[in-house]
Amino acid sequence: MSEQELKLHVPMAFRASVLREMKQREVARVRLHAMYFDTPERELARARIAIRLRQEGAEWVQTLKMPGADTITRVELNHPRPGPILDLSVYAGTEQEAALAALKGELGLRYETDVQRLLRRVRTRQGTVELAYDTGILRAGALELPISELEFELVSGRPAAIFSLARKWQQRHGLVLDPRSKSERGDALAQLARRLEDVDAGAEAEREARRAEAIARFWAPRAAAPVRLEPGMSAPQAMARVAAECLDQIARNASVLAEVDTEGVCRAGNSEHVHQLRVGIRRLRSAWRLFDGWTGPVPASLLDDMRRHFAAFGANRDQDVLNETIAPALARAGMPMLPAESAAPQEDARAIAGGKAFQSWLLNLLEWSLDVPAAEAPASGAPPARRARGADDHAPEPAIRLEGGPSSSAAARVPAIIPLQAAQPDPASLRKLLARRLRRWHRKVAEAGLRFAELPLAERHELRKRGKRLRYGLSFAESLLPAGRLRDYRKLLSHVQDVLGEINDLALARDHYAARTAAHPEAWFALGWISARLDELTAEARRAFQDLAHGKPFWK
Image (cartoon, rainbow, N blue to C red):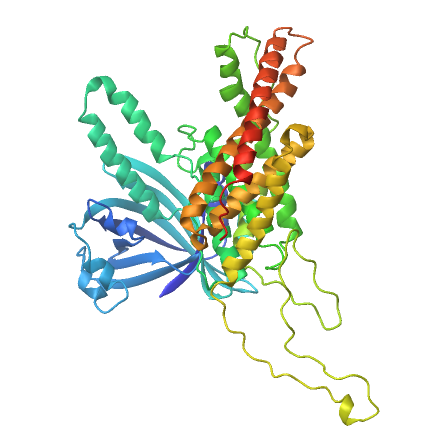
């Protein structure tokens, strides 16, 4: 069977208020102790399968879980057990049998959860939702993580029911979207426990540094992951898959910044999490432009909120670049030390990531991504819908066509109707659409890039954004394009992006230090160094764009 559920983390400051609201209606309370199994080489986790034995009150249940059709859907197989005895024979004849039969290692206990669960059902206009408030511990070896999460599971009705209810609770209690399941968190904790055991067995002189490195890897920033599109996909289906990947990158970095695992203990989030979160937003924005005109319009509220949050995180990112990249480079060049840098942004990244406004946007984005609308066909007699900027697609032939000119004969005025035939899927259609649009984006980037030295600052900045859009668009379409040509082209485009990125960072730093020259004459050193470096980079950018313009085309 499958289930649809949404899981939100409950921050420490709101746990009492969530508990009070849960108890305003009749609730059921149950103690859950679960044991999760895998092989030493994590074969089940790598196959995205989780198997557990869970004691639910006085009963034992064996459960297999794996991802379903979309982000909120899980396949779940439950079997009552007489005790804590794992029995794989219950999966004989199921779709999961082959994966389990292929296991090479021996299954063993990897991690456990010990949870107190409060259950309550809520009826809405869209359906019935079961709320499960879990508090407790996730344990792997000697390591523990707190569990404090509220699950919204659809009992009956439409998925809109869980989103409408989750939004209300999120706004009242500051809930945070956490894409990780308990099994994913447990598997990561078990890996950390194993790494730390290996570290403790090593040389004492290196032990602390290696422990710190292992712990940092546990909360490492979530970088972009490949997206695999299938040739027969429709544009909305492809957009949904791309959006799910971008949202996952955004939400996972946001959850670390919001201290889902570390609240009250340490701050695991850092400047790289902010950077990768903003990369996820840029990728999503690029995807919306890539599929513009082939899917329904993105709601204006999603776009407006995206710009606002991107700018807010950007203020944090700019400060990080100054402190962590530019200032150290200037110090190495011999610049005299300046007093403390400018004040931190008005709102820090942690507050933004865990804030109600940003988390509300994530929920709205997740709901939209589950059902990306198709582009609307123009009504009869209406002008065609706005074409996507940069699109060069041909409109489809009409299924019904009037033939014949004016005539006094009644028979001649009767239109001939061409029967409507089911469109035959063109397996190359998605590839052709994407390649055509990316080719146009390439041409615009290359043409402007060859004039880079003459471009004013504003146009250079716009060119940089176009280059990023092209780079992300290529990453979304790469599974449909020639791999060899794409690999060479990506190297050329990556070089362009590296040069433009440094130019952009230096332009921001130049404005910063120019504002400080009146009070601190030492800042003139920075302006001179930055000016010289920008001249070098301008020449390098010209060469990089020439290589890009004359590189082998990726779309053939």
